[in-house]
Structures are given as structure tokens and as C-alpha cells.
Image (cartoon, rainbow over the protein chains, first blue to last red):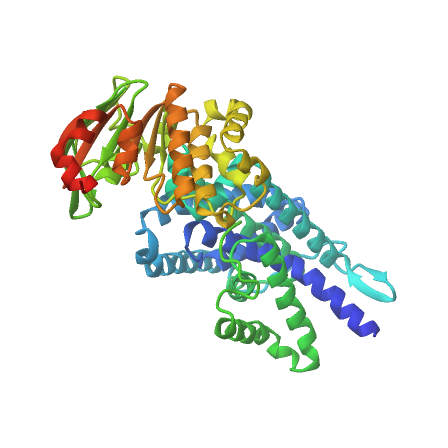
Length: 291
Length: 234
């Protein structure tokens, strides 16, 4: 019973991180109909940025979050303005966008190999090994912090999308861009902002990941695929859907230890993805539009 | 107020307009009528800016429009209620209306605009929290008109506002258009329901294959034998 409790709490903590990680991918897909294949590369780059700030300047990883948000927002807006903007609109651009952003990922990865070699890195903060005990089960402080930050980030994002004019414009562009133009909304600026915001969220996920896992320049591939699993599970772009999708994936992975050996844990998500795509192609909760 | 000269436009290789010229004076209700595919919708889309004209000039209140980006035209006072309504279906009625007042000037007066829209369409006030996509066709048309009014337009263009509506709703829509016109709003109306459009309009243009084939006051067009045989089936 205690073990089930421990695993359930671990799954919830993991789900928070997963949701924050997937949101950027879902947001960009919802508004631009583009799968940002560079997502994993951004997560990795943000982990390295955090590591550099920590090693060189002694900046605590969680203090580095605002820096990462600004840097990766700018990078995302730059990628949009310099590259993505020139893709053909609609289904015609789908393949090109995959190739283009995969190329961006390769560049980011190889720059990281060049700068930091392929060695595994990890951030050892003074509190990294501390844990708290709840009902006799102990949980690492880092995991709890990551969960709390992820939840705050998702709440802020939800407020942005539902309470502000800009957020409503983002959702409106996802649903009908021409009507936005008629209402006086500069659709192109909304797209730049959205790509920047989605990239900044990937950056946040990278900062959080750097405190949980060791990483090297290939880091991010599994994160991209898991993000993809979550947005497919949860339907694209709705915050509730993403949270539920993240929970399904996290619980399936964590509790799979009862059924499959631990080294197969990462395969669980993809089996889930295939099953859902076959049985419920609209996602588990069937909400495809950003709302 | 609006002056369109020799407008040519199209989509890709398919040219839809072959030199349309028309004008709308302040306070007028002008209607464009004609068969499907004649170019009425394209004309409105070109004036609103979401379709780029290949040739010809657009003047709004004496100023050239061609170089003005589409998303700046709402601020000038041009609004379009598009064919098929084109709402944001997963946003609430209220959010649809609020976004109609996105542009700065309109946003500062959105409370009054909202009151005005709710006064015109009381049902929208009751349904404010409902998703726009879950409303009936007539109610969606009200949201579309309300959204356009939220931008406080000086020229309101409407593309087939009665299309697909129940007869009682069609009557209601025409009453609303007549009322907006009576309150002094300048309106450019595209309608397939030619007799009802001409009933409330001041002037009309008959469009055929991308050109103006006939123009005159509403009475002239209603009594014109060619119009009567071609469009009214009399």
C-alpha cells in the first residue's frame, strides 16, 4: 500500500514536469500547425545554459529560469522570423517544416557537441540530495520544486491564454486567422509571439530537466517524443487535456515497473501512443482545437 | 466614403474580378447582387484587405487603401461580416465579441459597444458564456454582426447575412440591417435574396462574371425587366 502511494505521488510529480515540457510543443502546433522538431534540442540547450550559469557564475538553476525564458523566447522568435516564416502555409508546408526544424535540432545538437563534448553533465546543487518524508515515503526536494514550478508556469500560461487580449488572440488565430485579420489583429505578430512562447516553455522544461537528470548533447530526443505522446493523448492545446495526457503518461510509466523491466519504461509511452492513435485518433479526450 | 475603381483580383490563376467600379456614400445602404461566383464576395474581401487586388484602386474617405495592411483597416472603420460567419467556435460568445474590439480605439470603448450589441441582440447576453460554435446558425450570425459592430465601424460590409437561416431569422436579420442603416451606419450588403435586399437598400449594383453589369437606385433595379426575369423569376 505504501509502495502504491509512493509511486502515485512520484507519478503526479513527474506529470507536472511532463505537462510543462509538452505545452510548448502543443501551443506551437495549435496555432501554427507545425510540429516543432527542434523542441528536444531547445530542452537540451536550456539544460546546458543552466549548467553553464551554475558552474561559471554559481547561479542557482531555479534563479536561472527568467534568463532561460528570455533567451529562448528570443531564439524562438528568431527561428520563426529567420526560417519558419518562409514555409508554405497549410498542409503543403508540413513536410518542409519537419525537415527544417529537424535541421535546426541537428545544428543545436552539434553546436553543443562542439562546445561541451559528448560527456554526461549534471548539476549538483547543495540541496540535490535532500528529501522530505510524507506519510513515511520520502520524496526528493528537487522533484517537488520542479513540480511546483511546472504547476505555477501552467497556471500563468492558462491565465495568459484566457484572461488577456493577447492570449485570446492566440487562441483565435489557432481557430480562424482570417477573422483575426478582419478584427484588426496582426496575425503574423501573434505567430512570432507564439513561436517564441512555445520555445521559451521548452527552455523552461530544459532548466527543470537539468536539475532532475544528467544530460549530454543527445538529450531531448526522448523528451520530444514524450511531449508528442502527451499532446496526442490529451488533444492539442487545451490545458486540461495536456495535464491529463501528462498524468496518463506519467502513471503508465511509473506503474509499468510492476509489469515490464525498468529499461522498457520509455517504451510504455510509445505503446500508449500507438494504441491511442489506433483506437481514438482524436486523442483520449477528443479536443483538437486550442481553447 | 468608399470608392472602388477598376478592381481586378482573384485566387492564384483564377481571376474573379475583371474591373469592378463602385462607390458607397456616407449613410447609404448599397447592395451588391448577382449569381454565385459573380465576384461579390471577392469584392468585399478585397476592400477588407484579405484578398490582394491585382489591379485597380480602393479609396476610403478619400485616402488610398491599397497599401494599408488588412489588419490596419479595422482601425480605419472598415468591418466585414464574412460569408459563413467565420467565428472562433471554441471561444465563448463574449470572447468573440471582445476580440472584435481588439484595435486600440475600439478597445477603449468596448463597454459601450458591448451594451449596444446586447441591446440589438438580447439573446447574446444570455448566452455570453456559451461557446460560439455551439449556437444555432441565426445566433452565430448575430455574434458575427455583433463582433463587427464591436470594432465601431463606419463602413459595415455584410456577406450573405441571411444565408442558411430559418425564414423567421431572415426577417429578423433584415430588420436589424434596416435599423443599423436608420441609425446612420453606412452599409455595403451582399445578398442572394435580391428582392429583400433591394427592399431596404438605397442603391444596388448587379455583378456578372466579375464586372458591374447594371446599377441604379433600388426602385430602378426592382422594376428593371432584365433584373426581374434574371433574378426574380418574374
